[in-house]
Each structure stands twice: as structure tokens, then as C-alpha cells.
Image 1: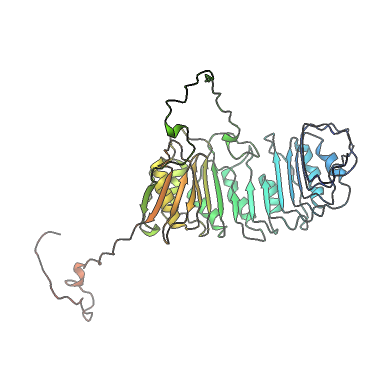
Image 2: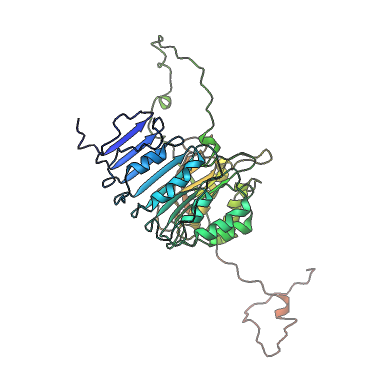
Length: 421
């Protein structure tokens, strides 16, 4: 059978019998299950046509696939994603990168939580067109400098230390292009000084994702413990024999339409006159206060700000719904390009749905936990700044003028009243 028009092939837990013969594929994804004899190569996708390659394999299965492409280059390959299930496979990947001159996107993951992957020194001419890079810190430090990388995702390891983040970011800033998207590794206890230094390295940043850890163990390749946490089973049963079960349900319970309730209107000053609207003691509270107070200045073009809390500490709390609404309002006026914000858990996510009038913060819709449809939609309006009060006339301006040649203010009426100051 000839599959001349097949472009995208995904194999999962498949034992491939026909191991010789290239298919003119554009995309190939293989997930485990290959039974390959030692030293035997596997030919599936033509190296001349392949544009995307995704591998998630067990020990000793990656090498047969890579050698199956032959010694030549893969001229069309622009995306490569490899998930290691054994650290011994990592040394086979980097020689393969030399044969991918057009590679623009690279992801190196592991499903084992290992932090001992060995990344050799890479030649400066390797992957010269690389744009986006995802992997552990060692990979980021090896491949980001002097390449046109604009997007970096640093995956956390089980030996991460917050003190290592700033030196890592200094290496990332050596990219040949301005970094526009940055996902930092887990920071256990963020402090103002290092965050100011990190943000200052990337003045063109559009997306910033800060993950705050705590005592939770973080697995390499994982951004959040929610991604792997098992959901509680729903043990409720459904009575399928009751033909009147839907008769007494409210219309809102069986409708998937948006609520007709008007959104909440939030009025806020611009940053020069706004007070930080949050007062809690969690790491997220502190970061939001630093930003709103002007201590931590983000890039003027920031579009996405994700402040993720991996594990809520016993002595702190998440931002309340009201605090989230006020923070979104203030941030949207400070950073007019901002279109997505997250506070803590992934469920506390807000997205801009409309630009609104000139000078306003637009309309926003949130997935905030424990919120009603009305509370999850807000409209941000810029509150007119109050007129500046005239500066008070100091007592020294009349009774204690240091310069006798200086004329006092032009006054038409002066009222002097004796009394205590």
C-alpha cells in the first residue's frame, strides 16, 4: 500500500515491522512501544521532507530513529521535541543537531525527573536559526547565547536554587535577538532585588511567566504540580429512568449562553495616583504590590503576565476576587498592551476581551475561582485625576524669608488668625 499523500503520522505504542522505506512526511510523532534490536536503524520519515519531529521514547529507542535518517542533513526540519526517559540518551541528540541547520524550535524534556542530563559544549554554528528553546537550565545556557532566540522556557529540575536564576537570565540575555517570551524556573522565595535585576535584563519582554514553588518537589519538564495531580473521582450516580428530572431545573442551569447580568465596573487611577489594592502576605501579593507601587517595573510592551503559585503556603492566602479585580484594573492602565494576567492558581486567569475607549483599561473576563458570571467580567474605566491642590504657603515665606530681595507672592487678600500651629 502506498501512502503518497500522508503528511502527518503519529505512532503510539506501536511495534513497527516494516523498518526500511521512507515516507514523505511533514510531521512525525512517536510515543514509546518500539521494539528495536541494538544497532538496528529505523527508517520511517524521509529526511528531505520532514518539518517536525516529536519523540517520547524509552531507553535505547531514540538512537535507531536518528541514525535511520542517514548521515545527511534534514533541510526542512524546523521543530524538534525529544522527551528523554533515560539520561543516557542525551549524548546522542547533540550530534544530530548539527544536521538540522534550519531548526527554529527545540524542546528537550524528560519524564523521569532526572537533573543529571549531560549537555556537551555545542559548536557556535549549530542551529543558527533557533528562535524558541525549551529545556533544563544547562540546555538554555548552552544554546541561547549568540543565537536569534526570542522565546525561552526554562524547565525546573529537582536541584533548582533561586540564587541560580539571575546568572541563568544573564546568559539568556546574551541572545542575538531581544527576548520577548520568558518562562522562569521555579523560584521558592522571590525577593524584590533579584526580580528587578531579572526584569531589567529584558526590556522588550512581552510574555513573563513566574512560577513560585515552596516546599513542593518539582519534576523536570513540569511547570506545575496541578498538571500531575490526580483529580478526585466523582462517585455520584445518574438516574437515567427519571423522565422528569429536567422539569424543575432553572433556565440558567441548562443554558450555555452568557449571563445577562452586567459586568462589574472598576474605576481606577493611573499608576501615578493608584494605591496597591492588595494587602495579603503571599508571594503573589508581594509581587503585585511591587509592580503597582513602581518598585518592579515591567516592560512597557508587556502583554502576558502569569504569576503562578505552585503550592499555597499554610501561612498565606490567595488573592481574593476583589483584589484580583482591582489588580487587573490597575495593571491594565499601567500597561495598555496587557491582555492576560494570572494570579496564583491557573484558575485565577483574566483575559482582555475588548479595548474599550481611549485611555481606559478595556473589558476583561476572568476564570477566577468561586466567582459568579457577573463577577468574572469587569470593565475598567480610567478615573479622572483630581485637580492638584495649590502648594501650601509656608510660614517661612513671610516671617522668615532668607532672601530680603526676593518678592513675596502676589496676594490680594490676607487673613491672619492667631492660634496654635
